[in-house]
Length: 445
Ligand code: NAD
Image (cartoon, rainbow, N blue to C red; front, side):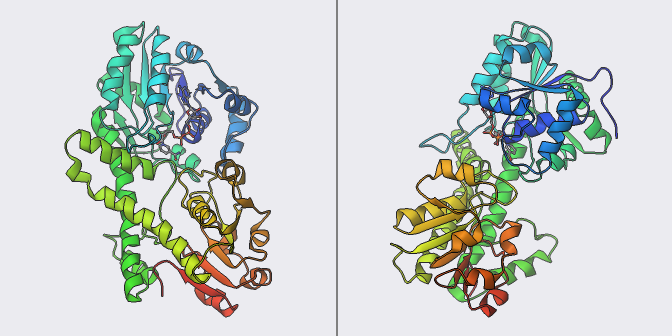
């Protein structure tokens, strides 16, 4: 494995959430000197004491090693970052604005402004956050006008494609690197900052700022569309008695289509896909090309209807009126192997049932603390069997491996009624039916 040379740039990572903490740790693991910065002092304290503030497989071990190496530390000071770094990675959040589809860029602006004011020497600022196309060009001007070093400071965009749950692997061995740059110097700095990754043969696509921003948006839109496509087919299956699971299986053999992201179910959520497609719709309308991505509205609507359909399946199973029924909700995170509950379909369904009068008990292997904070009105159980005790309906909402392995007989012994809604097509219907359960799933007879 290639390592950085003596002339390797010193790196800072600004914003140490899911993306930034992973990036900082992995870059230190690759041999770089790294300073991670966040406005949240609690997060910085935990990271400095060697604790990852969220669930990500493999990251705690790698953080411990990086801290021991002396190459990684964390701070709340952007002045310190400006002094330390040659290349500054911007990894702050870009959530959806309240009451609008648009991305909230206030964190990006606050972080870049504050960093720029302290930049007294040649430096490259590299955006990694997902932003609407056009953001980078505006930031480039702003950074140059605010930085004491002026024209010595450049901006580049390097969109990030990591998946939560596989974040370490995706950062160390990405499918590709995209460098949006406006000068040969910026490209050379980025190549130096990723030398070990490039040395492994990772493809690099070098382009302008706007294309780099759009690659990320286009990728997420495609993935969301693929999920909503098969979920649209599930709606048609529901109206015809066809089986979307078999349909997807048969489609997947066509390698022009492929089986990945073609899994029907409760749909997508999380801190990226939903807000990214909405921000894209908004930005495209601002650019007067709204029609080009109007289909993304439908993608979003199909996705939301899956949540509503899951709720109605549970109501049907319970005899129509959700008031007073006991529901065991298995899963809270937006996907397995993550504790991220941002726009999680699982919690959305649980909260909707609760609002309709159901008594919902939730269990998730790692997202309990986050779920409790976001939805304090729900009940929380110690494990899956505890959640199921006395339940009228069990609903599987996040396809954790431990839920796939539940013994239907053991769970059948503790519930009030053996009724299950499999929101993720994670269970074997034959096995559950054989154990006396009424099994229902989206898009299946
Ligand atoms: P996050 O909320 O987990 O982390 C953002 C961090 O930025 C927080 O710790 C916050 O305290 C910090 N922050 C906010 N303002 C700051 C400031 N002025 N200075 C320093 N730090 C500041 O979000 P995330 O999931 O890591 O996402 C960050 C960005 O990366 C978003 O644009 C997201 O769309 C993108 N992204 C995320 C993923 C993912 O899987 N999470 C993947 C690819 C891209």
